[in-house]
Length: 496
Image (cartoon, rainbow, N blue to C red; front, side, top):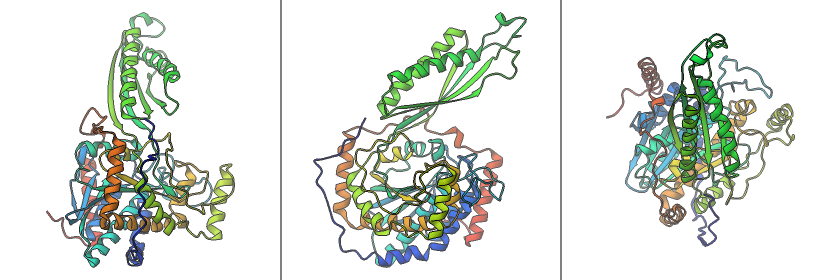
């Protein structure tokens, strides 16, 4: 489904004469906390489903500042939580992410170099900044609401495993985002804009084949080759590309294919990810891929098992929401980079063979009708409640995420400036959403129009994500991290 630009929607509301200076001061008052969260999570660099220190730190930072932590373990994700402050309407959601990527650990230098900690994981997608920005904006907004007696409820969501594309979808299926009027998120990038893109929906299938082992030289006819089944499946899947839409994507990873060359492999395993333009398209190609797995089994007299690890929706755009957030992006961006920071960025670009024009120095117009090949589990949130994200320069232009150069920038002054400015843009947008009912109505009207009457139904076959459930040992570790963070912030105990 290609989301069109809604030409008939002529709603345009200029910001009322709101004085944002008080709110900016509230963000500035949290500047040390914002960077402490960002830099600590950058150091932790924990992978999806393992974000025990990062999750604990950010949750307790919010609790220290008046939020109540509840609903740990939503959708089978043990490191998830909800932090709530306030009462009544409107109810504003803010998303937090904190997982890193394997193999992207890097020192804060403009070249590929191991992190001083020795951690080979790294925040090459800037989730350390996503967390710090959202936490800082939420605390500042809460303090401003208290002082100015602004009604409303803030809910901050700790969302694990975005890099696995299987976090917020399970949280949505479990009802985490029910009752929100609107929701915001943020993402560092190489440019300054808003997340008004139409991303791809996605599904992950784990396919296993079980055969029969045999001596590959002496008695091969006694065996049934599971690896051959996997090979047949991959040939068929690659042939399917001819019948895929241009906006669709197909990736796979061979996880197991035998342990010895002279043994007929009795087990093979593949992880396949299909991305398509809509939930309907995902379900169609999911069924096709499952048929291929069955066909490969029939061809080799093996037995297949297909597990749906989770599916996510495409991100639903919202021009009204995007326009208002862009107003505030222009208020706090572009950042005034120092000559040293621009030189740092250009050195990374030179290392990567990219044009050496440094960091972004402008704010892009609102994207409308833009198709993006990537995916995000924010899509599931966006089909439940109107959702928009601030996208901001935190690493050099022309450098895509998931690169060592991003990790380097996210742990030094470039990332430091980026998260502080982004927190101001997010907080200011939140203030408008809380105080302008006409704006909220216009956003909701566009949301309803874009949904075209379609109701959200999870693409995951299970309501609970089994990969998000930690072992007893890891749960104890998580609890220790929670208590350590509580002690650090001077929290005696959780309020029930």
